[in-house]
Length: 112
Length: 111
Image 1 (spheres, chains in turn red, green):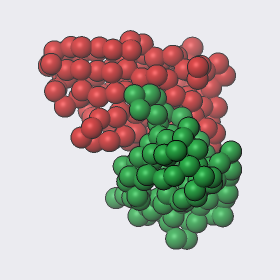
Image 2 (cartoon, rainbow over the protein chains, first blue to last red; image 1 turned 90 degrees about the vertical axis):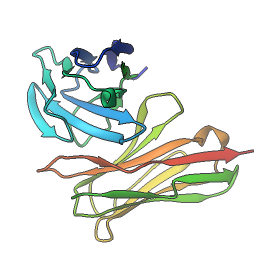
Image 3 (cartoon, rainbow over the protein chains, first blue to last red; image 1 turned 30 degrees about the horizontal axis):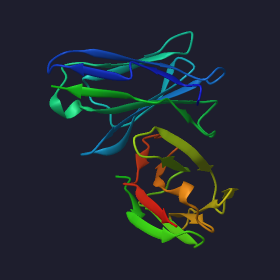
């Protein structure tokens, strides 16, 4: 158990809908990262937050947004969903950017 | 644009043998990461390499970084079946932290 909790584990939704994925980091970790893994695109870094502030941005679509709350949990919002958004979404946390990150079990999103 | 290439993409090796996975990247980067992923599972962070010449070892795995050559290696010593997994490298920069991943190396260790 990495100590990082992601919910839900599975999500099936229709095109055009909006979903929210949640991540609770390890106790004491200030950085939260979001990644997408799909067969087509491989692993992609989406976004990083550090202590509530956006720290780095990767290949995140404009239809996607994220935030980190004062209690350090984070949410990834995906809107106007398309079939191509079907993927595994991982959250990870670390003390800071130079430290090893610990990954949650992922949320498998299926858009139908 | 930052590109990351891993090779080989597939590696089948016998237990007890040594082998190296290579990770090349196209532009100057500040951090190099290695991850492991078991089939159907999440990612596990193995190493974070921060400077030229950095070498880190854990068990049968040793990672090194040559920033001048834009090359990192993951060396496997005396492979065992439990090392079978997909290994990813990734790089990013301090100021422009857009992290990029390699395609992954699927390692199979046979008895």
